[in-house]
Image (cartoon, rainbow, N blue to C red; front, side):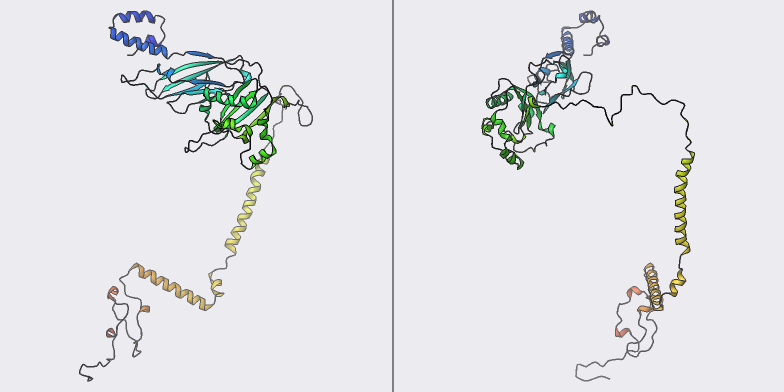
Length: 437
């Protein structure tokens, strides 16, 4: 059912007109109309407030089930609605999310996850994230707003931070509350701190890692940063031993005594662990000391006045064109003299060439011309140079064996003795044993 135009424009008398229009509708039409109205109201922005702490991992799951009610029901009764739904998240008024906030959704049939570590610069400032859900079956959309109110932490940041690289996990698997709780429990068992928080989680792909091959259930890997209020334990310090550093340089696994406490569920690459002690970090800020190379503060910029003298560039223009043109002209004259005035000529070449070489050259040219003429018409007579001139027996000069109209294609390649004139008959032996004259 299509709503009237006044409903879309937000007429303040909409409910009054709706009442008058409902009087003329039958109960079925009224039910359909109310269902349409409910669908419209369900797609209006609905805000949800969350209160994460600065410097602590923030995770918000976008559940597909909560958005299914905002789309039309499945066309067939009795079938479970399992429409593919994807999400798009952005900061209100901007095309992308804040720099500290990330989003991941593997497939349209899985939930989306917003995660990141809020920064202290955004404390007290509400961050409005627009969440748009797309139904890939009906191509309808629904939009919600997520208001993130970042709170200041009591002891932010935690002075001791350690970053682990877990090889057998993807980022969405690590973001699950059960898996993350198990990992923090294992770290707390090794570290023994009073306070332990997950600071940030980063996929290995965001650090320049490669996409794993789809074999043997390989994972992308994930970096997990945790913070505590006590110094690092001796087990975590074992990575800094020279022996373990040598093994890491040789791409071998270091020997860590507490690795067995993680190995049951998490495969940690101890060579990539990072231990940061905030208490020993020295500020790198240095006050700028003005001296050589740093201009003094001259106040506001003052453009040059209009009283500057104009400069004539005509002479520079002529010099720029005249010099290359003169050089090009000289080179052209030299080349023309070499090509045109220093030629020896054909007569001088023939005078310096031996006669026998000229004869050979002339004979080759004549033979080449004759072969080219023969290739144009293959029905002409054979050249005289290919026919016998002397009789093989008597030695007399004989004329050509064919006339001008003789078809050369039927002539055999070798002449037999029967075709030759003035042939001497050779006596042949008779069967009776006598010779015939």
